[in-house]
Length: 281
Image (cartoon, rainbow, N blue to C red; front, side, top):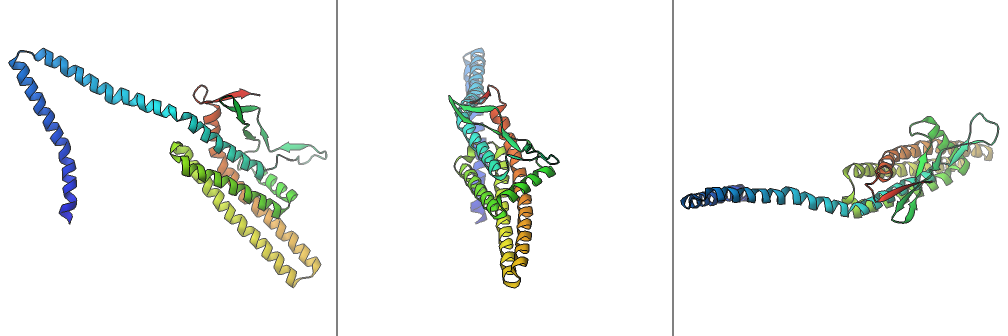
């Protein structure tokens, strides 16, 4: 059994030696004939031309064909990048408030959390998308407080449902791109998007768990306590759900920042290289 496995390996190793031996024999025969006919200079010239032609065909033409093939797929690749960027931005728009009340100010003045910047991504002659710019950096404590405020305004259960639906839609879009067109993506963005997908999946599980725990606490209190106590426990359970969901959503926002920055750099900052064009508003 072992001998039969080693036989194909031996044949694969013999192949290059057979080719090399055949080339050496051909060169020796050509050298002998050229010397017998006193045509060694012509042989040297012919060999030089052949070597140059082979080198040109193998290295130069092959690379030109690969370059043209790569350029042929640039438009499709840019379109995929645009879809990924739009998917991430749409998710952020659902998870984050556009603006929050400014702390320490008695007026109705608000602080923006994100804005749609004054640039348009063009694909051909059509305005495709307006990119979103976060005005709060990931990792800042203000980001979680903004999410906490937004969840409080909407209501914890409604916010969890909204966040889970948005995450599910984004994950479905991302997985569809990876499954159908993943081979067109660069290795860096593929790894980032896969990490983003895993972060969304984990967040959805945690949100479901947190929502179930909140419902169980409310149901238990309704059986054991009076109405006033039940309302108090419900408020406490809602506050816990808001706090936990703000942490979970913040982790998703953090995981979205890196691929978002990479995609924006590819689509907006490659002047003259991308099929997408910048137009300042």
